Amino acid sequence: MNALSRQQLTTYYERYKTNEVIFNKEILEVTGLLSKHIRLKCKGKLWPCVIYAASLQMVKILVNTKSGLMQSLQDANNGANIRFCFKGNEEEEPVIFFVAVRSIGYTPYGGLKDTGMVTLQFVQQAPDYLIGVLGRILDATANTQGTSKRRGERVIITSETQRMLGIVSKETAVSVQGVPRQCILRDISFYGAKIVIMGLANFLNDRDAVLRIDFEEPRESYFLKGKFRHSETVEGRKDLVAMGMAFYDDLIPLKYKIRINTYITQVRAINRTDTSTVPETSQEASPSASKTVQDRETEDDRI
Image (cartoon, rainbow, N blue to C red; front, side, top):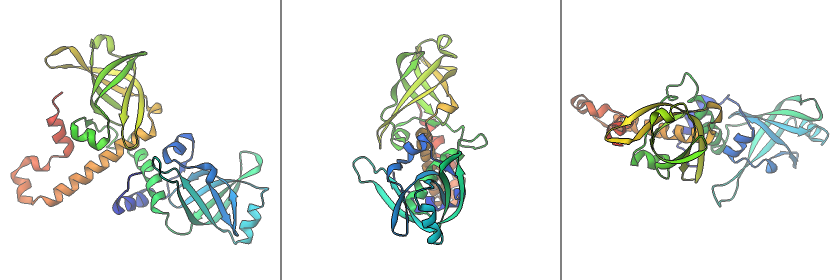
């Protein structure tokens, strides 16, 4: 996971400290949480447990109620430490740390006699690593909701945006009703993309498609399923057409959303820095001084 600034970590904590993340299969993959190594340390003993959900202030775990843990917590006046373990980047060692917690609640789980859910409140502010891991997920989720201004923002693919996003190449492939075809990325967003492809708009409109985008650091390939919704002509090329593709909302990988959200966050931070360093007289004298990076990228696009 790339390092985050102190300001970004603070922003994540202040905005999302009470928001829960449920640890389903996709969240486990995105966070790299190594479930088999999660333990609750109480009275010098490590007890196996499963993380069900977590926020930046607490964690809910599933425990075996017949293991003796509940009695141990009672004897320790509900104090304990939970051990987190996350997969390291590439060949790096796992990231392991303990967080001091206090048990504040218990409920039976799913009608199972031997399983219960224990709610643990963090005694101090969560470690930076945990804030970063959960904060990225919560921020990307918030910014893809229906009322978010970021939801519909398009990122024009230029050499600079390609580098910042970590896209391997804007030359990629799209499968149209199971038939793979070469294409070029023109722009992408949380919920769609525009590609340039050989063919006729009348044939491609309303067709199901699967767009492949390859990313670096780490190297990952996302297969985005959706449908072609509209088309545009490509100036000077009758054999090419620009197709607008809408992704199916419930099939968009969370990792993809996080990458797009991270890019938009970086661009906005750059814009704020640029604006703060330009004298007011210069901004008034030159209309282009107030344009965002994304505006300039749109003007520079020449596909």
